Length: 360
Image (cartoon, rainbow, N blue to C red; front, side):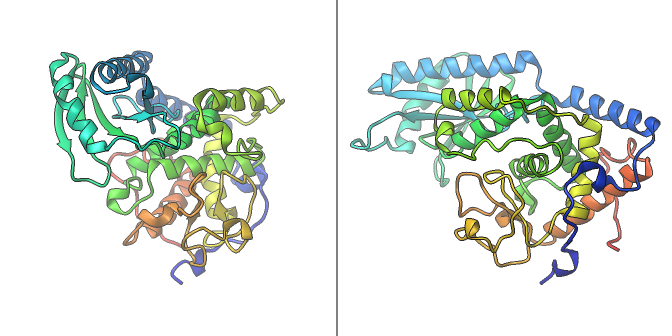
């Protein structure tokens, strides 16, 4: 197996133990903190952009209500990074129009519904229909809102809503949870390690890697699914789950700088690559041969395993091809080396691309 030589066997989960003898100097910590804050300030969505998402959903809801039959059954919701706590400035907005129906009713056809909505959207001055992608597995209308934000509108494509609510609940527990996810995402994008279209992990998978690290390290992030998936089937219930955990006494004592360093140290020195499963659903360190993962695809292969929190069969390594996993490993190792050497601010988020590290 190509990854057999890369499997790590260290078992410690304490953050300082992972950093070992390479503890940074105060000056190095200050430089990294400054760099991280600068990158986050430049990358995070503005408050106006967040209000814009709210306005967009309101306007779409109005168009649905005036166009479709049984308007009271139709709802709109945004999903994905724009609303899960890891959105970047100017990012696209994924929106689904969906029906709340009893099991006795058949959902409306997505293509037909989008065709019905196309002209009313063209007639609304806030929207521009830029493309109709009707032959895709999930048909979408590509829109432009207020001349600024790109929108992908789908119909009854609700599978991503529970995932979005889960990640948003985690991000709401502490500011550093969202900040660390965004910092890792920016690093991965700067080094061309993020993007399923190029054989790399999605930004969603990187978020799960961050959450899992926070769960199993000394940060002790609580597992929001330890009792049930049910709270994340509804927005209000997901919020109540987050509030319940926030009120349970959990406190994050590590700084963003410590967590950022710890993320890379964990995945190159402590994580059992090829055996251990990144499972936010369980929030404990377990290997792929556990009965917990009997439905997980590719669990017997020596690959990076990342379980989807709701689709128990989905292994998020399924988008990786070519040397994508090898590049991820070498990227993590190179970033850890830069953080250890203290030469990181100029190269860690360099748009010129990742360095070419040597696996020892």
